[in-house]
Length: 56
Image (cartoon, rainbow, N blue to C red; front, side, top):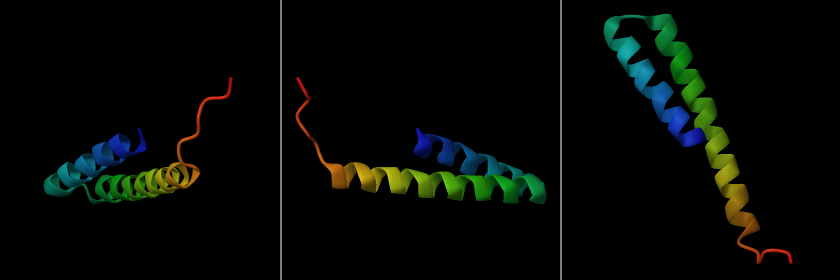
């Protein structure tokens, strides 16, 4: 989920940069970076926890 949102904001930043909207491009790029870092953190936590059998 975080990765798809990060990619969406990255695309918005690129399009805004092409059209010259520097403020929107900068903000969108910053949001994309934050979401990508959150994705990496959650991904690493899930890798470290590993798969566990369901509790019954």
